[in-house]
Image 1 (cartoon, rainbow, N blue to C red):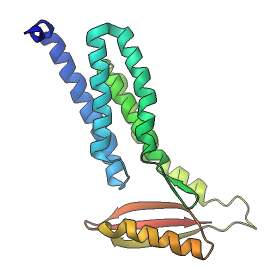
Image 2 (cartoon, rainbow, N blue to C red; image 1 turned 90 degrees about the vertical axis):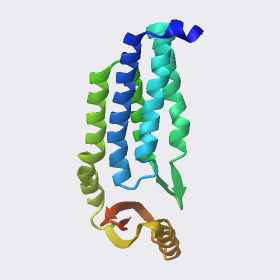
Image 3 (cartoon, rainbow, N blue to C red; image 1 turned 180 degrees about the horizontal axis):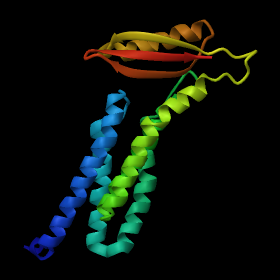
Length: 204
């Protein structure tokens, strides 16, 4: 019955608040990713944030602040392996870097929640969501601006298809464009209605 020695209701309440915060904030970050049909969506971001919070909370309970610092260092490096799993290389183009960076940030939010830095975790979530939403139009505007007006032309192809066929359609788009020497610069997938998605292919 040694576990009874570690049962302290004050600590248990504190842990519950940390886990709930990580769950909610990770869910907010993941919802934005899920809405944009990214590889790592709602559940992945929640689990990353919650997992980081659990590890840090355990370290705090066992070894205090020093233990938390050591565990956070491992979380920072270890989450890179998970992020690498969502990065894909297709015909010279790399996709998923933003999603991998978001997972890294979700882990940071979870670590902050696990360390009882609730306000810091909330603030970090606000900035992460701002980076993924408010900066998006700016990035698109910059991408559409040609580097050399005489040599560069931007073309965007829009395709609407059933969401279950989106991966197959993107593969066929890649094959066709490469065949005719038009490698895509970027491919974005957005929800379109309840059953369809809109595939936006950017060519230069």
